[in-house]
Amino acid sequence: MSFTGEFRHSIDAKGRLIVPSRLRDELEDDRIVLAMWPDGCVAMWSGAGWRDLEQRLLQQGRSDRPSRQVVRAIAASAHQDQVDRQGRINVPQGLRDHAGIGREVVVVGALDHGEIWSPEKWEQEQSAVSEGRLDELVQGLDF
Image (cartoon, rainbow, N blue to C red; front, side, top):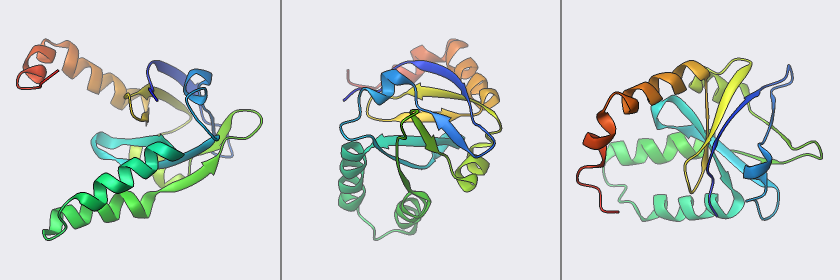
């Protein structure tokens, strides 16, 4: 499974978002799980991707407070939904508030999951990388 690409969409008055077809094609059962994510966005996983994340979170040591807080925040904010016939999912108000999302959004692929950003936050994120920092960021990574 590989979520890739950048898509501009809007959220309707009922809080529904059309999942980009290229990302929908990666779902095995039309099930999506949304949760708050670092950097001020909402993360989106397939059912299988969410189960993988759950296992990784369970394997983390939880003897320290920050680890427990991260697990709690992600698990408590998780929202499971089924993609409807029009390709839409509901993005709960609490998750929209976390990400500062209004009507317009940017949906981006992050390989094992998708991310939903406010256009303003996404532009800030991209400008930080495009200002020559990409070379700095990849130093020390093994790929």
